[in-house]
Image (cartoon, rainbow, N blue to C red; front, side, top):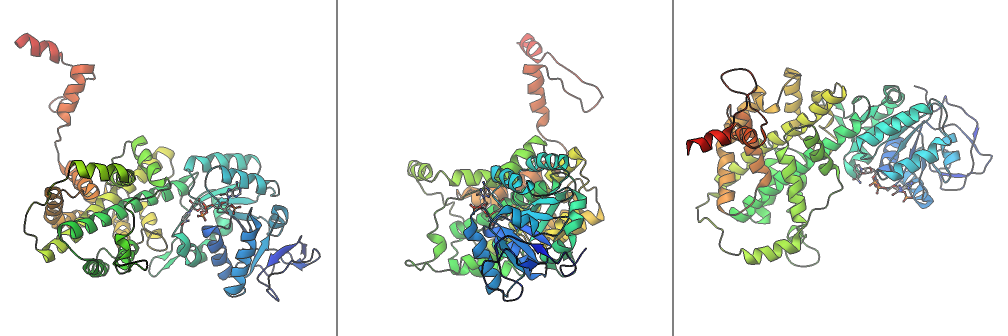
Length: 513
Ligand code: NBP
């Protein structure tokens, strides 16, 4: 790895704007201005790109930045100046941007996924040379990354698809990063990634080389699917506590803050506690009660569910969280239906608040185990299909910091895969199995209570059904298979002898009449 100081000292650049270096002001740099080459470039300066570029500069890696709309370049340079004269150099045209980076050049793109990525690649590739590398840091569909990696290879360029999680804060101060694709390209920038990613004491930087092809994007996609599951399960815990337990926002804040000290310790539980403390500055009461009950989405949850189906992997908790977002979007229809089906849905059961809070905590934790088991199984199945050889324990490790699903719980997942890398399902890891056994009575009580009171808990119910289906040695699938053989001669296997069988069910049944 070459240091900035030792890189080429006299590149002539075309006019740009600079934050770092002597003077450090935002000013046009004269064409004859001489400077050393930067270590890396970043194109796409919206929320993620701007913050990641500042993070890289802050860690001591001089960086060139570029954006299609040049005002964002100036804005980023201004921020770099204000945040400590960071070594960040802005460019208004792609040629001088690319030429300002030391060879082999590495450019991270953080633009909207899809066509903007293709357009940005075309812009950059026109100026890149053999051996240079492009890294897509967006939430891209993994097959697009594989297509682009191939196309770049034909031009002698290297390509990485790198999922970046943690939103704005993570990008600025330490995200979780999931780079996949060219190992050689990863090695060019490993020193940078190890420094800019989130640092978790005792488990290291939240980055690792994920694997070949589009594996980095795929893993990030499933991470987002798991995030959907976590958010839905937390929302259901809130619904049961509020709608059945009648907890106030003040009490909810305390409950979630308390939960965040134990096994549920996580970013999402922490921010949930905060949300219940915020008063509405536009009127009376709490802000959370004024937020419209309609959840947006950008597509990675849907992709995760589609992939689960493609791979024949059951992922009912993640699917339930996606379906809940779809149903939340039908606000007008739901309001109309609530008038048709109005009535008292209260079961009249006496609820002991303290017991309910404890039961919901356990139900949330057990449901979460099922949701992660499903996400990990999607990744495992894809890894097998593509021959990626992904290390599931290592994924749990790099999600421990920087990203939205960061949680102490991930440590347990890492240990489970360390104990057995070939684990068929997280549920049967001895520690998780024991945790589920210890919580299942409470879990069943919460789901039954919710059902009896007309409160939907699709995620918790789906998790419980997943567990009950997985743990039973005999399911009613015999009947489904018999039906298939009845109407479609699809054959069946028998429990008592090998082979494939077909029965003339109709003829036999009707000859008996
Ligand atoms: P956006 O996804 O909102 O994209 C905006 C950026 O894309 C701007 O720099 C814009 O340039 C550029 N762009 C577009 Br739009 N069309 C372009 C084109 N045809 N050619 C060149 N550039 C184009 O930015 P973001 O929210 O920072 O996210 C970047 C990536 O990171 C996305 O893939 C996103 O899914 C992912 N991500 C986002 C978050 C988050 O919290 N926001 C978290 C994790 C991952 P312009 O300024 O000229 O319009």
